[in-house]
Image (tube, rainbow, N blue to C red; front, side):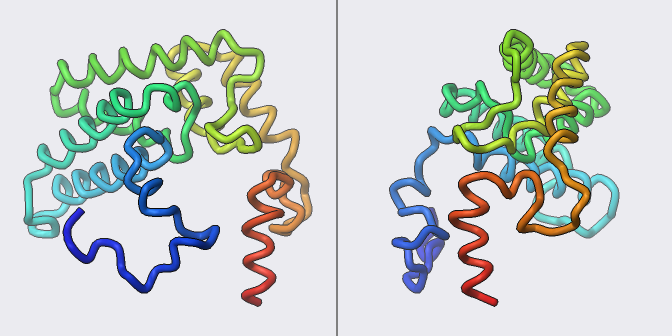
Length: 194
């Protein structure tokens, strides 16, 4: 990383910051969708708004979004068996690769995502995440199962979300707040910060 990327003022010993060794670990898939999403947004901005993005042309950003996904598949193969938070951006990147006529890239990306969807289709409940208490992979599992025609798995995934979403509009009682992270980490942090 460029010098100064990580400020010395950051306390890397708290729950809210990964230790540097972990932060630099390419073997975890959870960060790749965020990077791919950033490239994809820059692609859309460069494509749709003249002069708004000037460092590179729109194709450069779209291709970097694609290479971020293929990098994830190469460097974090174990974790790609799970759906990922914001992983649905991979679907939108695929759509734009096709729209731009980048057929070779689109075909490879679709084949990589199909391997994942085939695995999810074999599972009774395919929407786990890389952490056993987590369910953030549901969004991506849903969209790819629907795309590849595994409607029953898409339905199971959607119904699981609907099953734990209560009607009470409260973060403390929200369905996914019954997980380890939200009660032991986020809620503790939110309460202590007012």
